[in-house]
Image 1 (tube, rainbow, N blue to C red):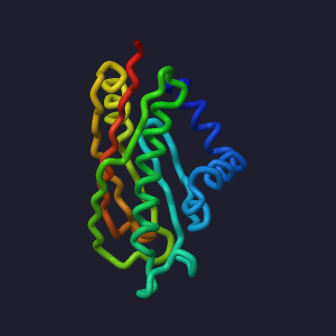
Image 2: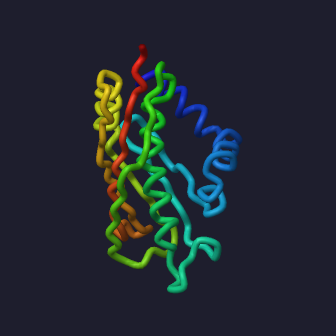
Length: 163
């Protein structure tokens, strides 16, 4: 395991650090109840449970809450890959896409398995003056394992060139 990613994982997943990070940087994620359920260098799973605060008028998860959970599943892998690097590449969402298949109720899990591709894109960005895009996939499943939505979040990494 990459030692920088291991430190990132340990710091982020500590309950107090996670809450502080969300409240300071992503307050809507905190208040909608999105959590990181699992994190490794290859994969990240976030979860959100349908509740009064994150519902739409049709009594299912609001699409924006689902988009946030999907983005967090991909973005956490991105943050873990740039953690501790000098100079640190910047990261930016440049495009989002989503397809909704079923009503999202109960607890929904969003999984991104693109960690290896993200690692390669970050490494490429470290050796390039141009931004390096990567299209990440996150699939949302309900408690029965059925696909309720699919998301593609395109991130761009760019390292500020020294000199």
